[in-house]
Image (cartoon, rainbow, N blue to C red; front, side, top):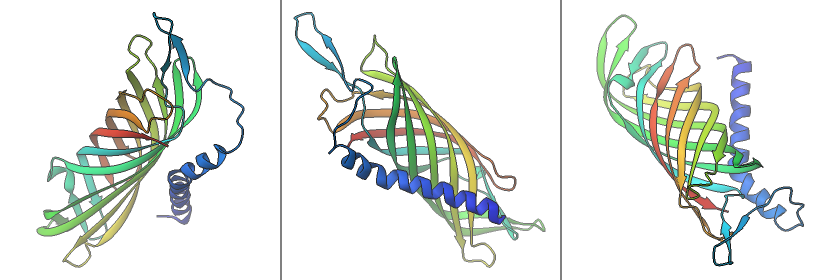
Length: 245
């Protein structure tokens, strides 16, 4: 890995952590000063009885803890000594993550938001390892997986179904894998850039601006690596909770 490539990865990780940990602080600080509103935070409509009610929108930053079932069709890690094709040896694994989602602007029923996400999963057990001379070993391996990404989320509010909001998220980031085994030459860390596409639907947003619970989000994510020597590709099924800040 070249110095230029490493520096780009560390810049990406730096921006990710800044977005995750400082966006709530910036939001709290800006809420103490007067704001000039360019869009309506809450659209107000009149009911048939003449009463006003809120048609809620997630207009502030929120956190989304998420549980995902990862199903890698390809997950192969290669170092100078071994190649391990994990994707052929387990069908799925569980991943937990947290995302910070910040609104950027509205346009009609569309909203554009930025996302920053950090996750973790772990797998341990006996796996087949292939030496480059063709020898196959079966050893106990521990694999830690930390995905980090930034994305742009495009969310649409359906006037006919206000309780349901479909969205699509496009973005990229880097996987960090750490592989350990009780055999020489197997311990290794890997940085693997990737892109992803998530289609999702959000349900049951809060009913007032003071609500802390912003509903559920169900989604499916496709991801694919951009590395020449390492391969990570597959789908995940995601369930998230939207916690308004």
